[in-house]
Amino acid sequence: MLKIAICDDNIADLSNIVSIIEDYQALQRDKNNIKYTAFQNAADLIAAMESGQEYNLVILDILMPFMTGMDAAKEIRQFNQAVKIIFITSSPEFAVESYSVDAYYYALKPIWKKKLFILLDKVISEMEIQSGASFFIKSKTGLTRIYINRLEFAEVTGRTILYNLTDGSVIEAIGSLRELEKELLSNPCFIKTHRSYIINMEHIDTISQREIKMQSYALVPMAKANYNTVKSAYITFAFKGSKNL
Image 1 (cartoon, rainbow, N blue to C red):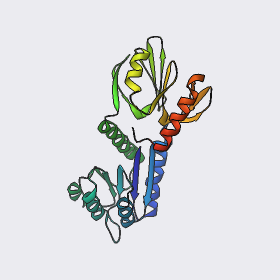
Image 2: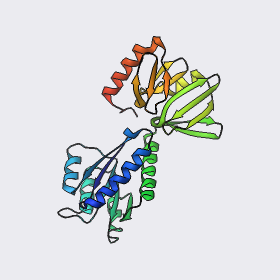
Image 3: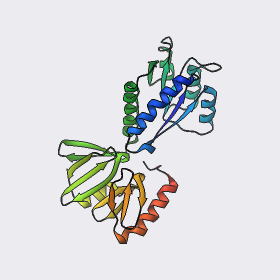
């Protein structure tokens, strides 16, 4: 999950960034994969992070009263070296200084939707690579990386495996059910619902005795003998959260 903090004292600029992020969020199949919190001053942002709030990305204005975005970034770096910091500001004069806090990007206002979309894509992609939560398959188009958190469910038909991703795409590969089970079932977010289906519990919407509705509205069959096991596993998984991804 990408957790974003946005901090800007200018309401119009803050609203613009929030609007862009919500547009980006709306384009994602799994809309719960992006969360954001907006702040109007840097002190509140620092207080939230020091109290335990975790963010993968902080989007900061620089020219703010009481505490500038640059001062906030310096303070953040004292206790968090991993969070990515993007400055979006009206002044180019702090661009060089932004290197001292290892800024991920420095942009001038107004930030365009296309530019922020590209940055968010890049941040998510780097998070997935760093997490190592992926595997490679030999698909029809060549060697393809499958990211665990983007895999909604997999289906086996004969010697063909269909990997259904959260963006609606389907990647076809040659393989067997045994190979698929070996690849996925060692990860606690996956469970077998049917003799030919393995699902990612992170993307479940509702469970019934005959089928599971995924967040994409796809319906995956449920074997009667597996219902209690799947329901129990999902309850446990849901309470623990998605820490396994």
